[in-house]
Image (cartoon, rainbow, N blue to C red):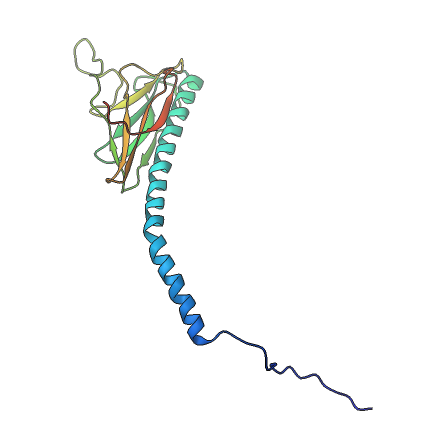
Length: 184
């Protein structure tokens, strides 16, 4: 008997995409991508703002926990001119774990701190009783609360696109993130 081999030949009714159809699909994808790209860039910019606010809020929680755990005042200081912030043990407390941490905000962000009440000074008015010189700060005491003279609002701005503020909660036991309110 004769053996037949099966040869893969295109069937006459089979179709493939033509070059014109592929070009049309590519043009449609290019149009869709050009319409979506600006929206996606603003989405990612908003993520930077939200992420930085979350990091700063987490640092306030950590500072409060650390003040209670170590039994010493912890300062969360802010340097708006350099877009940096960090933690340190209040000066004058010995034996405390002095792990200072410094964070730098994303270059597209600006940190704003409204004017605060003057920090208390010593009787000779020669030192600011533990607050960093010329820098706004939140002072967490060993009982877990923050001082009345601490920063009451931290604003994070990303150009004209948006802003978030970190403010004390209604019960004054911590801080929270809110959209910037126009009322001061």
